[in-house]
Length: 270
Ligand SMILES: NC(=O)c1ccc[n+]([C@@H]2O[C@H](COP(=O)([O-])OP(=O)(O)OC[C@H]3O[C@@H](n4cnc5c(N)ncnc54)[C@H](OP(=O)(O)O)[C@@H]3O)[C@@H](O)[C@H]2O)c1
Image 1 (tube, rainbow, N blue to C red):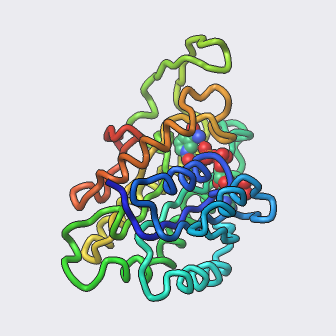
Image 2: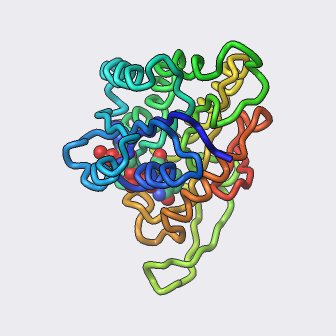
């Protein structure tokens, strides 16, 4: 069962990040602190409504690509935690970049933008939060009892970053077109696919490097979800996806570090 004392989520103002914030507060044993970070707190209307009803929610301004702003966020988190560590870092913020993303139209700038947000930022933010995550582990039993309630980095990745599944045709029913059967043929989406593939390697590499410190590192695919990024054709609603993600996070242990699962707990090939 998931019961971290503190969680930080990036991109918490909408989509999966907002729903994660909402559902974490509904846990049987909810966190004492949920650091809901977003680029523009002033316009994060839904998040502000949640925070006004829940003193455990702290809205912090964070553009994940602005590495020189990380220190401000860390010191705000440290002040709230008052000597305790951070249990769970969820690197959720991401960009889809569907435009100019196929082989003939992809641009170097699109590739850089996707890499900056989807791959580089989760690595640099995890590095920045390492001392607080380590503090959450405590002095003993670093490699045993690993969990998302103790000390973990969850990277919200995508099956689109899996090389193994890219070539497999997948059929689905489109909710936006009266359930019409459509096919996902793989290929294209160079910025998104390659940045998420990089994020997968970042996850796997951190799992190796952080295991001796007792910090879990796992990549999760939320399914194809109806959000701005997922679009109206996506078959899964955000509530269902996040219920699954929370159940999966609650089930992770030291044997799970360095793995890649979907929101139903099914293993995904890298
Ligand atoms: N939806 C899907 O089908 C699907 C499938 C697989 C994986 N995912 C992954 O799930 C995660 C969440 O996606 P979503 O579906 O919830 O998409 P979304 O509704 O489009 O939300 C994306 C979130 O990321 C934030 N963001 C983007 N760039 C940022 C930056 N530089 N700094 C801070 N925040 C930033 C956005 O903030 P702003 O409002 O400021 O733009 C927004 O909060 C992403 O990593 C995505 O790749 C989604």
